[in-house]
Length: 136
Image (tube, rainbow, N blue to C red; front, side, top):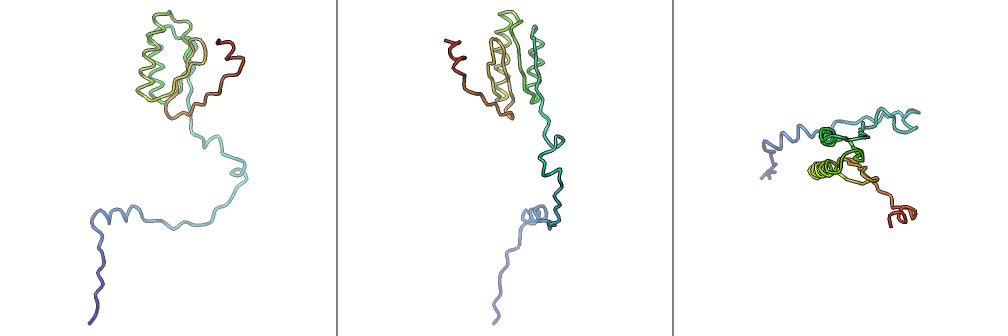
């Protein structure tokens, strides 16, 4: 007697997966060019935007900064020219936007802040001894 071998027949999703996951043969005809060996080209790097807002005097300026942060642009805000009450409102508003976007908030100086989107890696260097002494 002949033995029959059972073969699993792929189902509907299995056939679709096979169509999309078919591996194309890869040719090994890679030629190294001098440009490629020199490092990445400026044209190949992703574009990254940083917006420096030197003076924020109105709440509309803060809304523009919040919209930029939501678009993924890093914001540097200088609130030193704003009135004290408005400065606190802007800080509260921008803290809320930054929290919702899960971004980074760093104080760079007196009333100067860096807000970065979650896609940006922000590295904060430790304070120098001179800076630490000035704060005490």
